[in-house]
Length: 131
Image 1 (cartoon, rainbow, N blue to C red):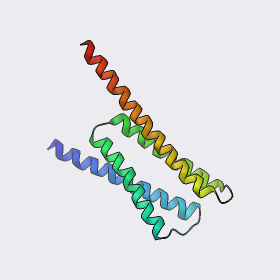
Image 2: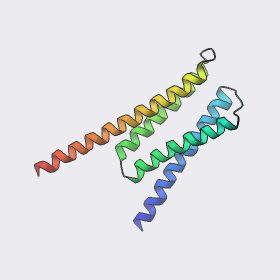
Image 3: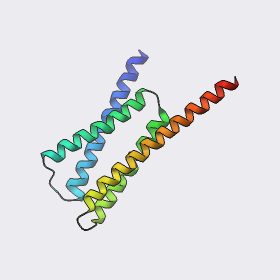
C-alpha cells in the first residue's frame, strides 16, 4: 500500500512541476513578451516542461530530498529571473537572455542538489564508519 501511494505522489509531483513549468513559459512568452507562440514554441515548451517534471519526479521517487529541494529552488529562481529579464526588455535580446537565465539557474539548482546529495553521502559514509 505504501509503495502505491509513493508511486502516485511522485507522478503527481512530476506532473505538477511539468504543468507549472509549461504554464510559466507560456505566460512569459505570451503575456510578458507579448509574442504569439507558434507550434514549434509550444512543442519546445512541452519537451522542456517534461524534462523538468521528469527530473523532479526522479529525485522525489528516489527520496533525494536535498536534490529535489535545491532543483526546485533553482527552477523557481530561474523563472523569476526569466520574468524579470522579459519585463526589462533589453532591446530585442530579452527573450534569449531570459531563457538562458532560466537554464542557468536550473542547472545551478541541479548542480547544488547533486553537491548536496554527495555531501549527504559522504556524511553518512563517515558516520557509519565510526559506528
